[in-house]
Image 1 (cartoon, rainbow, N blue to C red):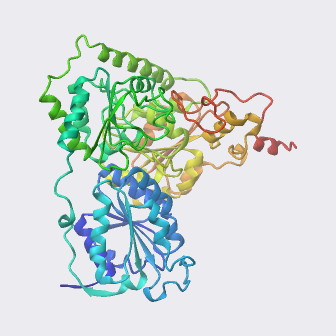
Image 2: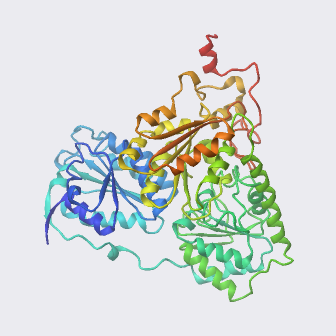
Image 3: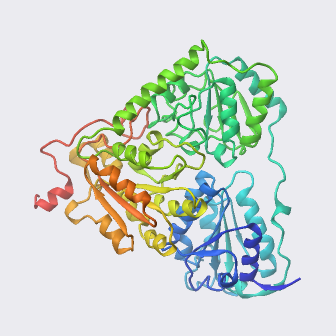
Length: 602
C-alpha cells in the first residue's frame, strides 16, 4: 500500500470518482487539504465567495448529472456554504463539501474560527439539517473510507449534499492506505417498485377517464424523461411537470400542459384539479405547487385518486393521501407501469377523444395569452417581453438559471424549454444570488450548450462577484439582469397586504442604485449593454449570446404597478394576502419611502 498524506488521498479518490472540478477558497484551515491538486487531473476552479462555490457545484450537477466537490477553510469560510448546501438539499442535488477543522488535539480549546461553546468542533452540527450526512475524520487512515461513504451518500437513493470536516493535522498526516474503488460501494441496479403496487397503479390508470401525469424533479434526477413521455403517449395523458421537473417533456409536445400551482398555467390547474387519477412521479407537492393545498384550485385529492411514486418514502403521502404509494426509482417504476398497462390494453387513440381535444384547447388558450405578453411593446418594458425575446435568440437546448422572485415566477411557467436539464432553478429554497454562479457551474458541466442566468437587480447583488470568476476562468456565461430598482416581488406583497403607503425597505433610490453594466465592465466583462425599449432587445440579446466570453444585458423594466411578475392563476395563502395579489398601479399621490426621503419630505 502506498503511503499518502490526507491531501493526496483526497486528490486520488476524486480522480477515481471522475470528478472534474474542485471549487472553493483556501484558508489557513485548508491549504494542506488542496496541496496535492497542484499535481492532480482534477481542475481547481476559483470562485470569489464560498456561497458561490456551492451554487457552482449545484448548477454543474443539474446540468451534467455528476457531482463535483466544494472545499473551504474552517470557520466563516465553512459557514458561508450553508445557504448553498440548503439549496441543494431541498432540491436533492448531489455535491460533496470538504471543510477544514481544528487540529485533533485542539478540539474544544476555542482556537481561531472554532465553534465550540456547545460541543468541541461543532460545525458539523450546523450542517446536519442541510445535508444528507456529515462526517468528521479524526484519523488519516479513515479518510479513504470516509470519502467513499461521502460520495455513496451523495449520489445514491435520493441525492443530496454531503459534508466532511477534515482537521488540519489530518490533512497533513500520512498513512499506508489503499484508495477504494467507487463502483464497489454503489448499487448495481435501480430499485424497482413492488409488483402488487405496480398492478394497482395500472388498474387505476387503465380505468381513468381523466388521468394526469405530474412529473417532478425526481424524474430528471432519475433520468426518466423518455419513460414519462412514452407512458403519456400510450395513455394520451397530459403531463404537468413541477417547476423542478421543467424540461422532462418538450414544451411544444401536444401533451404538455404547463405547471399547476400559484403561478402555474390555467391549463394545468384546470386539468389537475378535475383529474380522476393523478400519477405523481418524484414530486413533493409543495405549497406553491398546490395553491397552498386549497381544494379544487390546483388539485382536489381526494376525490382525485393519487398514485405517488418516489424513491424516498418520506414524500409518499406526506401532503396528500395516496390510493397507491410506490417506493422506487422514477425511471424503472414508470417503465414498469407502462409495461403493465400495455399487457392489458391497446394505446389510447386521439381520434374522437374528447379529453385529448380538451387538453389541446386549454393549452392553446394559455399559449395565446403568453404570446400576447411576449410581444407586448408597451413601455416601460415588462419582464415577460424580455424573456420572449431571449427565447427567440437561443438554441433549442439552451440552459437558463433562476433563483428567486419575479425572474423565477415568470421564467418557470412562461419561458419554454425543450430538453432535460434546460431549466436550473432554486425551486425549494428560492435562493437570491443562485442564478449567476449556478449558470457558471452549468456551463462547466455542459460546455457545448448556451447558458443564461436570469435574475433581478436585487438578486444580482448577492453573488455578482462570481462574474470575476467567470472572466478569469474563461467561462462563456450570459447574464440577464431585469432591473426594476427594487426587491419587487416583496414590494408587491407589501402593497397587497398593507397598501402603497406601507411600502418599506423594498425599493431602491434610482439615483443611488448601482450600475450593473458599469459593474460588469469593471469586472472585465467585454460585452455589457443596457436596454430600455422593445426594439433594442433582439440586437442586445443576440450580441450577448454570440459574444465569446462572459456577457451581460441589463433590461430596465416596469415597477410602478403590482402587475410586474408572473400570472397568478392559483393561490398562495399568506397572512393578509386574501385571495391573491391585487392588481394596482401606484397612485399618483403616493411615493415610496426612499423617494420621499430623497425629496426631503417628512
